[in-house]
Length: 318
Image (spheres, rainbow, N blue to C red):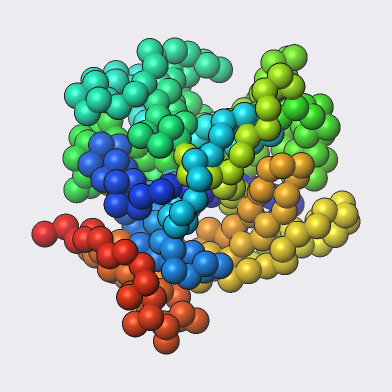
């Protein structure tokens, strides 16, 4: 099927401090900043992208740095926790020690769905987890950051399952199956595991049933949206038609320069479908990815104005 979802594309969350967020992701987690640009819908705020060594689709966590935003509130009907893939159980152990060294708040190592998991959070109480790819099959991971601070045999190299909490549990899962053609691989009264594409850690949603908590509230420390991969423009165009057939309101296709995007909200959850290309090396070479403020051509004529309005920070690797 031409509109088949291939897996996770990216996750976008919110931060109150792009600089501290940059330090956390590069110096502690060991992910590469592959693009420092602006939010194309709010051009005086940063949009930063952390990914694998070359910025492959399916590896990037991105952040909006909205000014004067309030802290978000954890709760149901939300994108609750972002996962990152690491190569092995030994990598999970490595990061546990690393988190202790850097005083990162974390839980003990546990197991979920047959994989070792290490849950942690940043200073803004954004929720994350590492998941081991040991014995994992399915969507291929990316390439660890070659010049990063974490040894390549342990380093984060892709997005793992997105954890979602909803109160309208069965209806939400039905939509994921009927609209998005996701396959239920495990279901009980507490959670459902759904998969897309080739499956595995890079192509799963973990949906938890939560009717007891209050609704989450958007703000820093919360996730804004999650994106799924499709191959190309043709596949994305097919999704416009699919949404029409299922009467799902959507944004229409938006050109984000580094990829094209289509947005739709299912209940409280904002889903994006994005093309794999053209990618982050469209306007910067591999050697200097993320070091300068990158602007899509449509905004280049406003560079001087934008650069005077956004708070500068140095991401060059001297």
